[in-house]
Length: 159
Length: 161
Image (cartoon, rainbow over all chains, first blue to last red):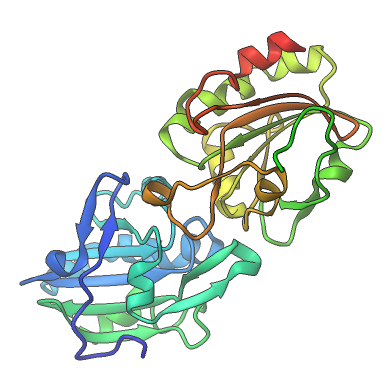
């Protein structure tokens, strides 16, 4: 069942900057208000032109609503995620976490087969507000890749 | 079966810039002198710092030896490969070709499990460099451990041409 409001986040490790740097998503979100958004692929057009930049530029607005951290997740390795974040000046605003093996995506049941265009199973596009490790709001794109309900301005209006 | 000197390049499609832009490696190599460089991962430190940049900066030297094209392949999607090429200023010097689902790497018999570091969605490619004429491999250097930078370095391949 795809992740929904009321669910506890799974205790899964993601990677930040390098394979040696593990971040457990359940630990990261404990006691905090965190935005998590997932994308099908680093450097892909929709994710790069609209989805990630939206969250980077709305950082202060999220902070003023009490959000502690914004996290971006994708099924890419940590080197690719770090490079993508750097290209979009995400540093200090959005943490780029690599779901290297797709474990987090699978645990949330948000897999999408993008083997044709991207060569592997990826994550559906989504956004969520998590409080103390529990999902409060989850917005999953109906077709998994569109740029509608999961965009930054949409989530902001829900806070 | 692992590719070796004397073998024909496999008839496999790679992608350039986008998933819609297919490049058949046998067709590309037909009638030409090409260098093909394989790496474990786009944006990884080793591949990015010196390895691929050396092939980019040696482009002029390869051209003076009659090489028509230099290709870099990795098991990454085409958007990642294009972004990496831009980051490295590969420009017209090295074509960044995506082996998104690892088909080319598998056909060469050069797969390597980098599960711990780069994920298990597909095996990655061992580091290698090769020189092919009219689609036939003439020189081939595969790193013994699959990832270090030794025999497959540009200066070594250049010296063999």
